[in-house]
Length: 189
Image 1 (cartoon, rainbow, N blue to C red):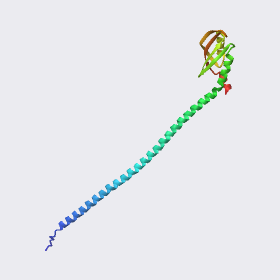
Image 2 (tube, rainbow, N blue to C red; image 1 turned 30 degrees about the vertical axis):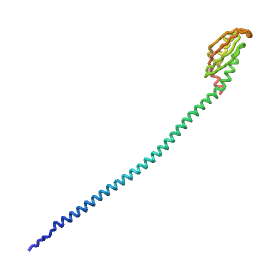
Image 3 (cartoon, rainbow, N blue to C red; image 1 turned 30 degrees about the horizontal axis):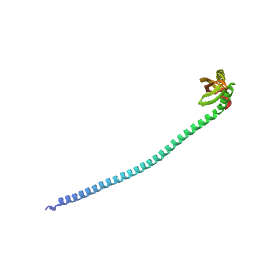
Image 4 (tube, rainbow, N blue to C red; image 1 turned 90 degrees about the horizontal axis):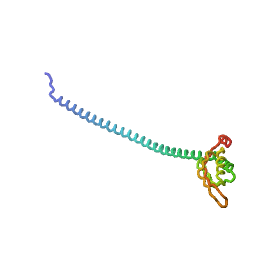
């Protein structure tokens, strides 16, 4: 006779399969959670590392900004010093011109002319004085025009006055331009 197994083997097999499926599901869920947590830790570590890099870069940028500020201050100081040096150099080169100017004025002043005031603004020279006559003022202007160091005399004011002690006098104001002869630049240096 054939043997028939009436035991509920299919149900036992189903229970084993359900148990294995449950364990597999729990294992997969745990593995998924572990992967998620691991990924979170990994990216958190990467973010922390990038934050440290950013902080380092921010600190280095601040150092460079301070250095740039110092460089700009040094460049400003350098430009101011160069400007001062240029001024000193121009004063050094113009120093003999004052001597030539006074020498030429002394040569140009004719007898009977007395200078009261000499003012220089840039290359413009204003000469005030008193002469015994207006012809002496004209002679003074001709002498200025002949001078290699003075050019373009212009008579601004002339006033003739009658004085009991000195007689007739002419007060004058002349404006002239100081120049530098080309051959004088070569000999002065």
